[in-house]
Image (cartoon, rainbow, N blue to C red; front, side, top):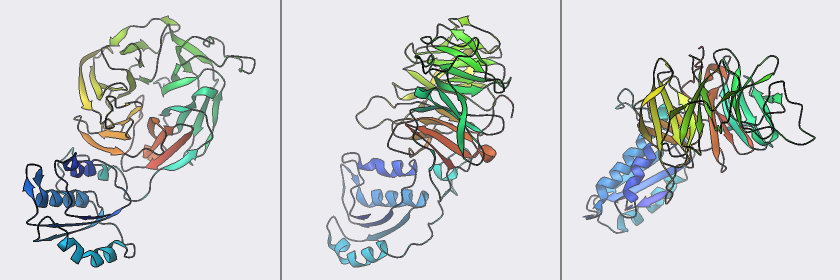
Length: 403
């Protein structure tokens, strides 16, 4: 990319680009910037300062870039004079990328360059599925996900290979392992028709949405709660299931050690289409993403499992000209950083609720669910449409019920 006398000022949002660069995953591009110290300084901004700020942002993120500042004004004379050198620099042989400049980061300033390795990106795990969702991991770091429409659950081992783990009913939109080792799940009902596999004893009916538990050994399905409309869920170490009711704008809670509990109690409300849900590593905070708004909420968890002190803690970035962020699946790493899927990508926040950056989606399709799994739980797995991807990170997830 070649830019001369670039207008990175307050004209149609040009002044936002340096800040966006610092909080967006680095692109595979090479950048040459030119400006003059006598460039414009008017109601829209200061051109020389804006170009220096742009160069500083590129340096911070470790881009291959070069900035040449002459003494010219707002014209193409200097840029034209150095054009041959600029083109030779842009098309030179590949060189190692510069290290990101993070020496001035304060503790807790969690830029993307501290989360993602310089090399590598998304790897395809599996394709040719229906609609993937419900990312989670077990105590050993194995990754699980749901092929929702086909009512199949898959397990991905440390080698990255996927295989069917549970086939048949029910259809799962969200799931997490609990402290008793069972897999708790938000069921959207069961596959109907003659081709549907036989349901386990105590399993849900074809039409009803429920919260269920699946025993990993016997694969027996037990109904935990009825008369519910769950989307996603999380399970605490204390044995509480929290799930989102997107249509009602609520978080519902129920104990794991129950069966067929009708209409479990509301734990929180007033959320704009709550979707993804997760807990901090110590289990003291519950996070909920808004699909229909631009916030993610934080609640304190009382010793008795109830929620209080709820607030709009994180501001999700939304696409231009859209009122909603599409905040969806949510996972948290061992440092307490929430990772939330959205229309623009996977948004990473630090433990104080500040946006650290947006990780690019693995494909053009919507990315609806993520989880840390694999060796050392250092791989971020993502469900995106009919495919599942993963990528290596510099952080790790955790297993709330035990490790």
